[in-house]
Length: 192
Image 1 (tube, one colour):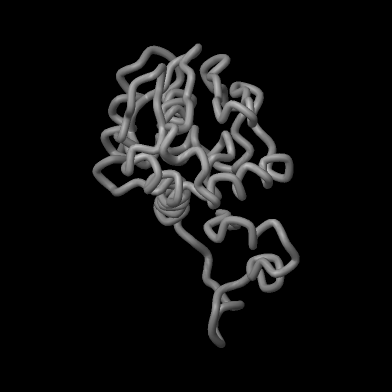
Image 2 (tube, helix red, strand yellow):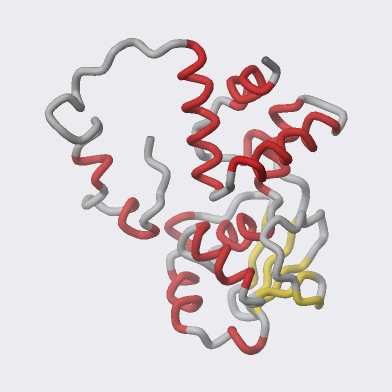
């Protein structure tokens, strides 16, 4: 599965996953049939690693999604997408989620005018995320903003590149997530 860990490289022809879509080594091409449990576990691990969460963080997020009214899988995706580190990545302020996490913990962003350095902070609709004055001239941030057109900004977000601000227009829905994932497998895994 292509998880876009290497920032820009996965958008070019040099992406190793596109060149060779199987595992490394002489036995990479011969795989046995996976069990139902291994398929569910692999799906959970894929989503967990894509969002850069530890096991306990992911489990707590799932438990929170379970308590919210509605479909648990959709609630889980909404909670993962509304994390501050993910939103800053989606807005194009960071090249990947790991870089976004580092920037958030170093206090590079303000939410509604207040400095927030907690990656798991849940943004709400109509929240305004802006880059702090101290970080606004950082070369890595400016370089990342140039690649926003290539990645695209989801419909539930809007960005003002000149002012270095992003606004949450609404809560994300399942259709807004472009990464292929089957959240139902994760729900089945945790419901055992």
